[in-house]
Structure formats: structure tokens, C-alpha cells
Length: 136
Image (cartoon, rainbow, N blue to C red):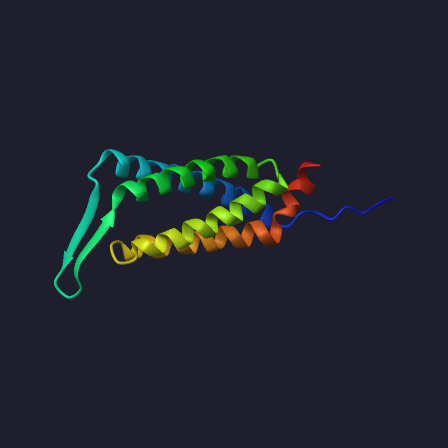
């Protein structure tokens, strides 16, 4: 007679992480697509810091590619694939680092997305194996 260990409540957080990565991927891909069809440069004039220029085309391609990869990894997290957990952590880290570029322009949004990415990384790295165990 074997005693099976019940998965922790963090399995729900893996579902949350998958959903958040899917949504973040969708938003990133949409943001990238809009940047590609919009103007070539984004600028903001600040009296204290001067002119802030940003190449929207390169940023658009970056967000579109990362967004599509995040959608794929988020959907794969529901199955409990180990590779999906690794890719999800890498993409959440890349997304968090990419949000650092937006701090001068949209600080609240950037900090919120960075915090959500940190939650996703925690849930996937610490409790990701429980999804696979629950599916088996």
C-alpha cells in the first residue's frame, strides 16, 4: 500500500502562471503589432530630462516574437511539460527585463508587469513539478 502525497495548492498557481503568460504573450504580441503598424519612433518631451526617443519598429518586432513564444509556452504549461516550465521562466525573465525599457515612459505598468513576472517565475520554479505529478 503506497501513500500518495497530494499536490499542494500551488498547482493552482501553475494554472495562474500559464494564464498570465498566455495573457502577457497576447498583450505583448498585440503591443508589438501595434508598434509595427504605427509610427517609426516614439518620443516624449520631459522638461526635466529632455527628449526621450525610442525606436518603435525594433521594439515592435521584439514584443511580437516574445509574445508569440509566451503564448506557446503558456499553453504548454497546462500539460506540465518540463521544457515549457524552463521556457516560461526564461520568457518571464526576458519580459521583466524588457519592461525596464518602459520605466521612463510607463513606470506603473512596467512595475506591475515585472511583479507579475516574478510571481510566475516563483510558481513555475518551485511548484511546477506538481502539475506533471497531478496529471500522471
